[in-house]
Amino acid sequence: MSDKFLNVEEARKLLRVSRVTLYRWITDGKLRANKVGGTYRIKQSDVDALIEGVPSTQSRDGEAGGRAPSRSPLDVTARDIEKWSEDNRLAQENLPELVRWLAQSASSAAGIDDLHIPSGDSVGKPGWDGMIKSNSGDRFIPAGTSAWEMGVGPSEAKAEKDFNKRTANPQNVEIKDTTFVFVTPKIWSNSNSWVKEKASSGWKNIKVIDADDLADWLEVSPAVKIKFLSRIGRNTKNLQDVETYWSEWSGETTPNFSTDLAISGRNESNKKLIDLVLRDKTKKLVTVAAGSKAEAVAFIVASMISCDEIDQALLLSNTLVVSSQEAWDEIIRTE
Image (cartoon, rainbow, N blue to C red; front, side):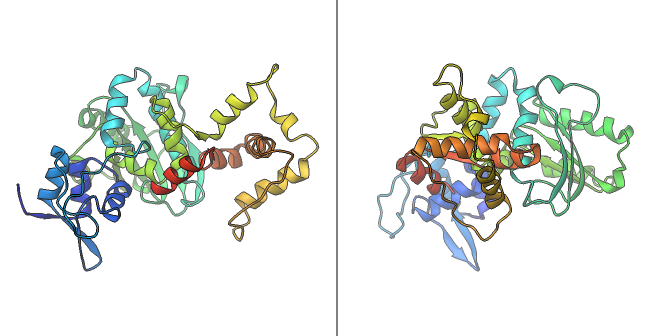
């Protein structure tokens, strides 16, 4: 094994985990790391040991005998995403939906003014796979106008095809003012080289989001991650996205309980709740009083589902329903 030291980015790519997961392993003492000048340095031999399933050489307090870290049930790796794209015949339709959820979850922080990413039956229609206009952008969404293409096939071949097609015919997009973004659910290790090759093509910027990046994006979007995990058949017991919770809860009655009934006679409280959650930045905790816990949760969820389209997209992509202390502890641990 090599005693070369790796930075965080190099280590996580070898381990195929997100930055959040890697930092959690370091904090928990499951992966040894030295802090040098504010950054972590990790021995490649320790990384190799984890890949091979060998017990780690040092626990957090410096004593020998720590074991290689086990995955949290909520971990999503690049390999999980790649496997999903290979096993799921609907991945071509579902990938834009996943990207839209992720973008919606970041819409406030990234200052998104306009977001258009068709999915489902609309995939395959002429035009760009997505268009986003953002004031500030973030790590995943470029500032300004970005035009998006997505594909589940071999990464470089699909990216090359889409890039050449859109550069020749950008369809009312001013390329000098626009960032070209290509999204693939595959692990594309040399995507940076491909981006550099295209740097002089006339676009404002070029960006690739691959399976590693999608895994990182899911880590900072827990509600979207839970929705994705449920889609790929992973157990997210006691953790649900808003729509799944409402579908199950409202379906317990015949006919199904409606959102209108859940908020009936509480229009002022409904409006106040949404304003407190979305627009009052001074509130860290909002308390809802009702006849029972189930009634309170139903009112909150129904209020979110019933609000206008823009607020609904932001709320649904950033809200989880947590039904047990164990589930709460797990979601906090992965943050």
